[in-house]
Image (cartoon, rainbow, N blue to C red):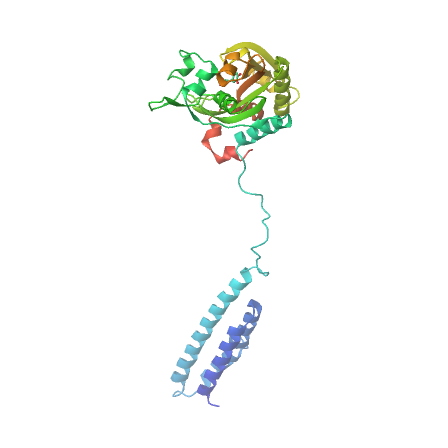
Length: 334
Ligand code: DAH
């Protein structure tokens, strides 16, 4: 067979071997078989020197073209095989359940609220709800709050421009009225919810915050029931070592009224002896009259406190605004 006639079949054989190489090792082997020092194609090139002057140019051109083709095929197959090697050996089953922890979690205020609700449920309370946009009647009048009370002032209350004087509720106490209007006694509710005040934001105030209201109405309810309930819940929430103190106070919707102060190792670490935590008292007879309950038959207690305050105590947080900035570096810690 003439020299020229050998080039094409050898090239075809080399191309098909290169393209058929099943992996990178086989490819290197095939490359060696043809283009290595002892390779078949190399051997053919070596023969070029022994050709006559007339034959040499055409043969040289052909053999160079063949070499370029082989090298291109080699590069292409190498890229394919490298990609194949990088892919997972087993096919991926996308229906398998995820093994990572779920992304995201509940906001710390939601966690604290759920804990408070859980404690109250243990002793028979149910969650009630009411509107955040309220009227003056439910937020103030029905709660026996006098028309000239400073809390109604536009300094404290956000009024919604409207002929009916709608406002954003300043406390969850409005829901006491809404619930009692709708159902006969006995009542045993808690009301977690958002409230609004025209406070300027600083480390301990925010124009919107969350409260929990509690209301218990039955026959023969006493201040002792109130104290026992509040102590049970706060010890569950903040630990057995907490101490509570009931200090006389004034609220228009309770008589007598108290503020509940709280002490714990954490409070003392903050350099204080007592921290004010909640307002409470025995439901005022006027309030019962306003909702149509007979104050000669029914007695009850109520309380209200801020959820942020509890969360700040529990997690040793000193700036309320952190709860509302939604900085994930903060939120991830809970
Ligand atoms: N509404 C009061 C406040 O926002 C808290 C409060 C005090 C609620 C006494 C009550 C209560 O139910 O009896 O500061």
